[in-house]
Length: 403
Image 1 (cartoon, rainbow, N blue to C red):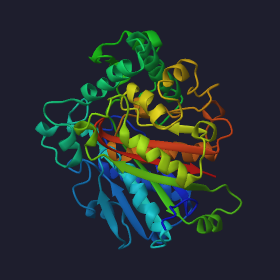
Image 2 (image 1 turned 135 degrees about the vertical axis):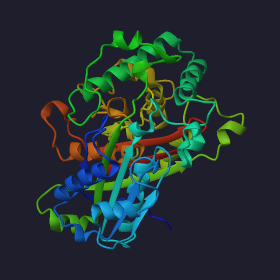
Image 3 (image 1 turned 45 degrees about the vertical axis):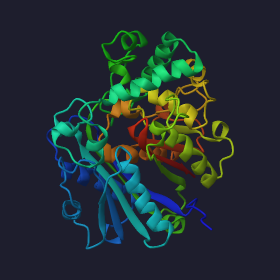
Image 4 (image 1 turned 90 degrees about the vertical axis):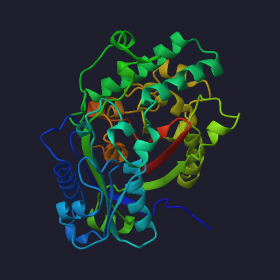
């Protein structure tokens, strides 16, 4: 019987670049930067890595369409290197490949790395097929739709289902965006580091009703990496140090069932609500609202973050609004801080890197490496939620890590 990977995998080291408009750096430059930092943190030599998984959703921009550029750039010593993509959950998929290899004892030490040069596409948002892009991203974001347009419908569906006035929903998502910008202003790796007021958010230009400019994540370049191994090997390398373990890693992929049945109300993301219980069971978590210490969710749009609170069983259905307005997800004084690093709202979304960037924040929070003003009080479990696709056809990855 399947038993999952709980406590079979430890994160030995991680690295992350600055995210932003990195016109002076190639995708390979970013790979080297993230990998070098990751190796240093892991306290091992490159020759000790047994296999590598690299996430890149748009190989046309940055590293090419095969594994060869990564192997050559990082000078990996004749080991298996696999390039993969899974829409916006690409970085998480790389971590899953490396983690499963270690958990199954196929590898002792494995590398997961993700990179994207999204700014090089020339688009202000995710590209569509008219840009000539292939792969999952191009198929999902087609020529006649936009990502803001699709996700804005979550807000109107949420309004209809829970009978919450749109003005209150707009106030709620403004608080979500404000919270993330407050956190991102403290983070030297974030792309967008200016604080904004709730009034600025509410009065910003409308992108797709009710989503304004500050309710939409930006586009950026970046890379992140993780080296994983067994807890036993990690403890032998990092003696007398805390070890962060992978407690669960679950992925759910939609078949598109939401769009062909009459049960879907449009106010949630079904893949999240399917993957979350599996992740909690694998991690041994009975009550996520009481046991999860902090989390990073895929806030491509602020309304998506609101829906995700409920899909993850942190807030009750229809109760996310009150939790937000009561400050439950704020870094300072909140019950469960969400987006302590600023989230996609402040980092942007270089697709191959985002899932690993989220885990990077949880990893360093658990190890208490940040300045006091950025630390989550007494964390035990950190959760990351990485979403790819539109509300009715998507993939979700949920990762839970802890000491």
